[in-house]
Amino acid sequence: MTDSRFRSLNDDLRERFGEKLYKLTLNGGCTCPNRDGTLGTRGCIFCSEGGSGEFAASPQLSIQEQIEDGKRRLAGKRPVKKYIAYFQAYTNTYAPVEHLRRVFTEAISCPEIAVLSIATRPDCLGEEVLELLEELNRRKPVWVELGLQTIHEKTASFIRRGYPLPVFDRAVKELEARGIEIIVHTILGLPGETADMMLDTMRYVNSTPAAGIKLQLLHILKHTDLADYYQHTGFHILTMNEYVDLVIRCLEVCRPDLVIHRLTGDGPKDLLIAPEWSQAKRQVLNTIQKELKRRNTFQGRLYSP
Ligand code: SF4
Image (cartoon, rainbow, N blue to C red; front, side, top):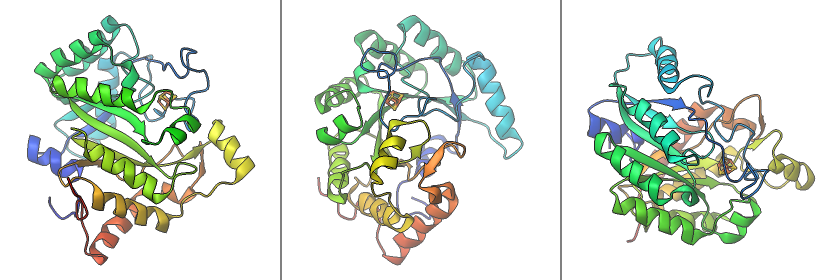
């Protein structure tokens, strides 16, 4: 760790690649079984029409064009040498395997792409897809980011996640067996979840071979069923102080070696209904750092294997 009290993604990347890597958010043109009618049509209750990928490039462009476009955007801001090709929108293993092979191969063929990172659902990792990921992982590191959100079935069913926990367990096992790095997405602040329930989710992730975790603040976005639910029930939205406290408690129980890929999130401005404070992402992150120091605490302080 550098100056921080948790194992941040940047620290991890510097150790492994000798420098910071920048994410290029790409769109592989996939959809999602929770939206195309296979499991449902309205998606997870919090998911925006863009499939949680509002910052991704246009799927009208080829992957090469998306990469060039992303590189141009970053070039003005800082000197960048290497990138992570991040397939974020929708379910990025939910397509015929030949399509996946084409888009992923196009991405890793770019010499400046150092890592291929794929966000997906654990129920969309069939044998052929796993074989493809294993093959690609031999060329460049492949990370699979699994949208778990919570381990609690009641919440999972409320948010319409669409698969039970054993499906996640099986996917984790299959990925581990193939040497593919796993990152788990979790959401803090889901309706009906107490802090203890969220800490249970952290402990569960500890018990898996996941290399990294994302802690995502629940956002209420326009045109989602969660927005309607919020309007009707006015359920409690975390304040910034509550969120900071919760994140610190999560960090304290997280395995010390678990790489923290995200500590909050900034939903698309034009879609965000609440919490408004989340737009000040820098301030949230600074407050977390300051509070970790003030409490003299750190990642893994309360971890027990
Ligand atoms: S699985 Fe992902 S893309 Fe699909 S509905 Fe849920 S959040 Fe949206």
